[in-house]
Length: 210
Image (cartoon, rainbow, N blue to C red; front, side, top):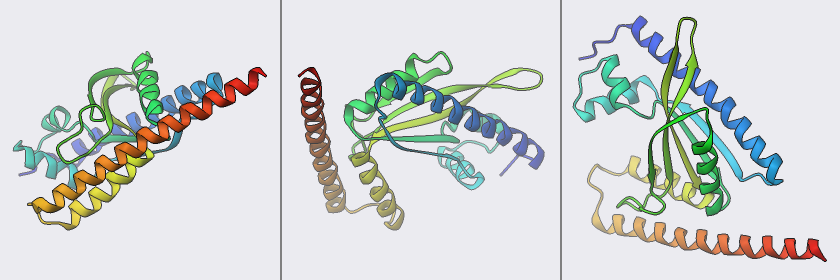
C-alpha cells in the first residue's frame, strides 16, 4: 500500500530535481577544468535522469519495504542517476579520481565492476554521492548514483538491458553464457583500444620533442 500523499511526494521529488541540477552543473565544471588543464576531453557523452514514480515504488516493493518517504530515502539509491561514457579505460579511472578528489560531494559508496564484474558480465564503475542542496532554511544532502564506463561497456549494457526486458524472469542458461561471452569479448576490445591509445599518445609526445 502506498502511504505517501501527493504533497509529500512532490516535496521529496523537488529535492531530487534540485540535486540533479546541482550535480549536472558541478560535473560540468570539474570536467571542463580537467579538459582545460590536460587539453583532452575524456567524455563521449553524459546522460542523466530522475527515476519515475512507478520505478521507485516497484523497486521498493521488490525489496520488501513499505511504501513511504523514509524507506525511499533509505533504500533507493539511484533516484538521481548519471551515466558518464568515456573513450578509454584510463578515462574511467581519471574521472573517478576527479569526482573522489572534489570537495563538492561526499562519496558514500563505490563499486568497481570493471575489476570485479557482476556474474551477468556487467562492467562499470559506480559511485554513490551525496549532493549538497542549499534550501531556504537548511542544507540537505541528497543521494545520487554516478556510473562511469567506456563506450564498449555502454554498448553491452544497453543491449543487455533491452534483451533482459524482452526475456522472461528466468533467463535460459545458454543465453546467459552467450551474454557473458560477449562481455568478455568487449573487455578484450577495451584493453586493445587502451593499448592503441597509449601507443598513439606516446608517438605524438615523441614527435613534439623533435
